[in-house]
Length: 212
Image 1: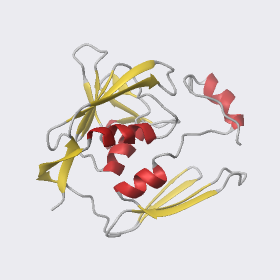
Image 2 (image 1 turned 45 degrees about the horizontal axis):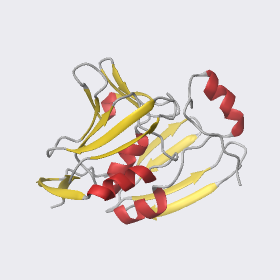
Image 3 (image 1 turned 120 degrees about the vertical axis):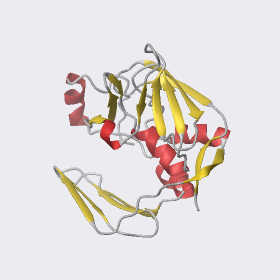
């Protein structure tokens, strides 16, 4: 039996939201078994929470936005990837704005937060999702196929429509390979996309870097 895990203690980080440009203070807190991952907006009356569940996904334009009633949390993907990669099943993420701090554009800072406090096993078993037959999903020019396997293995090819900057990665995902190979992968866009993003009220907290 694989046990659920939470954080041993709370840990905090402050910075700027990628799309909103807002200053934000974020704290990871331990949570009871079967809580899952929940985002708590401490800047709003009653400190409402938004659970990180598929049915709460409200928008996926250049980030993942979760919503519950009128409460929204934007750009949650790096936080959720960190918890999945490090093996955190239950946690509360407190925010005093609508978006986690972007840090360096990767999940590296979030991993540091988890490693700083460590993990605590809990008494309840982890409920794993099992794939019994292939699943295929196509969205625009992106294709994802999932096959049955006894572990989690990712194989990915990334390229824009002109074939620039093609990247390939294939590895079995464990907490160790997540930290070493994936956590430092950064959010990016192409130069010609910047004007569109700015006109649509996005990347207000972003930094423009030219390839070295």
